[in-house]
Image (cartoon, one colour):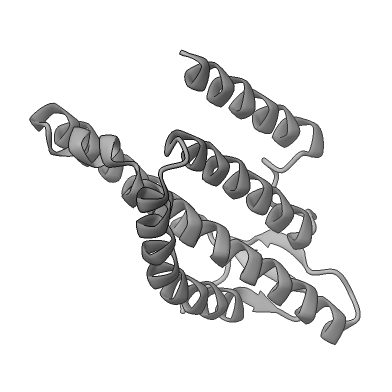
Length: 171
């Protein structure tokens, strides 16, 4: 019961931060602010799953190994994605990609619900270490991305600002 309350309150805090820092807008927001928000969110969820292991070193070790193995491709993908989206001191999001990501998130949610209904998802959720590993890889990739953005901003000499442009043709 306490874990559900902690998770719910934590998510409310992060949603409140989104509203007050206006991260729901894509135009004019500094990329470093969004990356630091993602880093804080991934740290919170990682610590939440770490708490669910109840100090079992076997689960933590499996999750750490799984996180390192998944974190390496996530870091390469994040670097490639940033390099393809940054134009000068702006990062441009295209509406088509945003809607496509929303469709994939919906498909993933439905798939997880079907897995939970059949019981396979419950065994993954009860094992905790696969989700801990996934969260650790997410955290590692956010740390890498944050430092990469800081490095790019130092190189450019200006903060990288977000922009949404629907007039550009997809690459």
